[in-house]
Image 1 (tube, one colour):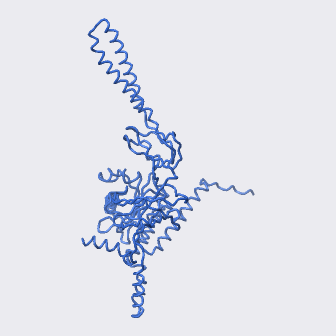
Image 2 (tube, rainbow, N blue to C red; image 1 turned 135 degrees about the vertical axis):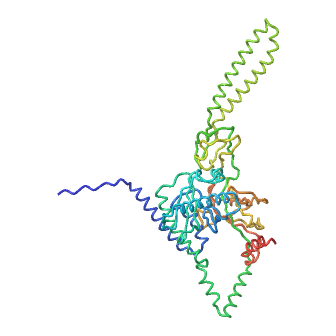
Length: 476
């Protein structure tokens, strides 16, 4: 008897491998979360490593206490400024969505959810007017709110994710399982804030009298060790003297001919503006110029027989000059519809979709052209962390792509006035150059920079931030 033919599957091997990889990533993230000894480490892990499973543009961890929402951590940020405009907008949006979620549960009492996590897609249309009007500035088109609950069903925390494309049903399902694990792990810290600390404290305070004195002496000696004051802050490799590509006239960007990071030559077309209106204006200007020329010639002929026509010639000549200038202006604008590169370099901008179809104004920056051989390090030090920086001691830069190694950079300028970052955080800007002869990191790479001040003792270096915070709280 012949063997029965095997049933062919409709799934491609690549699809199966992709889902299997997602499952492995989910398991790895849940295991990593369970073994985090500190709540701050868990928060950092949630907003940054969740990207390994589901890609997003922004991810923020928030907590809810007594009806108020506080944003604790944001992906890509070392410090979160609670008074920044982005954080304020995020708190308002999350607070409104959580209130809608609780109202929905109250209206539908028959709903029973045994999971610690609930996921809700959020769009601009679902938000209040005050939130919706700033949506385009602070969020991508598609958002996803992860609400984490405790054993009693009360909302305790959550994640906010957004990106340009919609989240797939598979991604939502994976995020729901991941959020359930995050919430379960988070409750460990909520139930026992001193988790992983009690054992160490107990061992310290159960020392005998002599051993306690020895331990305190050793601690005192360690605290008196000479060290340099230091502070860390986010840093980015930026172009040293980029060429700004701006819009020549008010209009709409039709097409973007290059991709971020593309190498372009002088004269290459970067962007094409919508020239429909300009082409019509140019044609009208040519027609008006021809009409003015015909009227002038006709009046000149009539002036030979009718001397009264001579008075009209000056007016017609002025109108002809005006129409000629309008025609030249329209032709010049039309010639600028193709924005070209004034020099060779690398195109630096966010994404073509962010520019394509966008209305722009004259002089508005759309991208930059940079020479990859001319880069520098831009360091941002938050206002609350600034120290007296010693310019003779180079800064150390730890790239995110190579976190185990560091590069030294020499300061070229130190900002003496704090300015707001795009996320609203007030920071001092420091610029530094890398050593000659070293391979320069790619423009756009980010990491953490460590800057140094003068010598002090270890105790002051450790207690400096708490002292500053205490003085600010007490108003001293």
